[in-house]
Length: 344
Ligand code: ADE
Image (tube, rainbow, N blue to C red; front, side, top):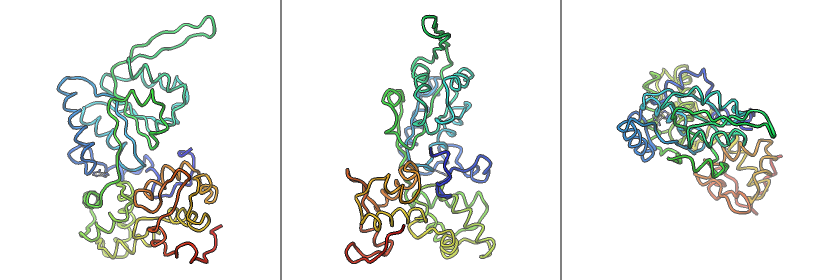
């Protein structure tokens, strides 16, 4: 389970709830939000329309790799609708009763945010169907021939689900969302704007080249950009007079093991495993996971998406294959010309 393991590269881990300085970097409104222009436009329209009709929003599903803004958008939506947000996650909702407790305390228009909704247990998911569709939950008393049900009416709430694996959602659940959007990796230009905005909030001087260098190494991911910025800020304040230039960013990030394409040690091990241990692939994800002694889920949800997006690997029906770009990046000669030994 992704939330139980401690093998996720540090840079991609969720911030702990006490990491206030990262939280303070989150935009609070859609006008402050940088990137995901089409999604933001859809949300602005849906929110304005719902407010005009004095109605709660439809249920919304966000799908993307980690760190691209699903939770941030849920908080912004609650803020813009002027409602409360109650947050939970798929693995935390173990029994129908856990869900009932939350739903029955919800007020009209409240946002119920479920992170990692694809990990919700089946029994809990079945409680969600009538809750989402009819704003009611059926409570069952007794068992067998004595079983009786009582239908509790709920206030009209909005469920916002976040997932890194929309494909794992059952179709009845997926179909109950009125708005479903995939969030994509951010462009370098958007990440430059995010880095500059965060630097100004954190009160650290940075020039254009410094911002660009950080954006380039942020794996298309604002959460990564903000994490890197905090490391580079420390470095700049201790070693470089508190000013982030390109060279300061390069030196600080090299120290962190982040290369010029934003790949870290786990990414490079992943690529080397395919190239060297499996001769470039195709190879199944479970074999790579066993070689690296990491969970397949982490590789699928956290590591692979950016490597695919950036063209370091491709996915075929037989498995993952490395690309020429990966060989060039790692400076490994093409197959046949290599005498490189397997990693493990
Ligand atoms: N910080 C993290 N994500 C952001 C975004 N999309 N826009 C502005 N600041 C951010």
